[in-house]
Length: 303
Image (cartoon, rainbow, N blue to C red; front, top):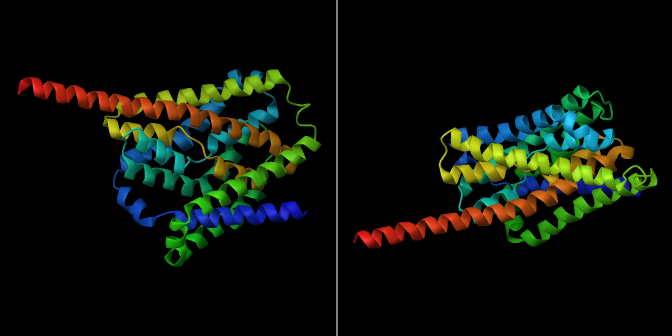
């Protein structure tokens, strides 16, 4: 009980600090690029859930039914904020638009993710999630977030100056929730329910989802006429899922005996997206530098 109380407090603090960190000025500055933002949101909250349901015949034989619910929950999560912006910057993309899209996704996800989760889990024929929990999201996540936004006027500067400390609180909160979830799951016999072939199947499922999202956002943005900088932003904001939001939400939405299976797909996907996007961001940056050198050489030759 003490760990449950501490976990709830840590989750509330996490979203309070997210509210205090989120710059309203940055959101307003990037909001004019509405086509880009709608594309990112469509990828995050439409493409992923549709993939999770349509790929069911392929995914379900590879994992257990409980893990598949975790995959469906993963598909409804908002995009990351920090890493989406960081990879967009490394790849020389549209950073202001990335700040706006990632921040909007995180905020919208507080409301949309629980609703989408209820719909896709119900469509799968599962009842592991309680609709009463959707209201709990508002109390435990949205209210602290709004409180952080209100307090930003007084503590926003302090939060920006102490980013390492805030990052420690972020990671500590996530670790605490993960520890609580997996402790309960281990007591329930998690590893007996998760043989190596199933774990391998989960890695394949995550790889299929990530690869499909990356390819769809890349070529879809080109088909929609976005320039290269906007394409980079759409790829890195529209293909990622937030561990920082997902773990606390899972703790509120699902019963304790399911948490281990729900959280595991998110944790593996998080590591996979970081490694893949790091390589992809470097390639984007190298291509841009190569194009600059080629153009410089052509100009010199003409002169």
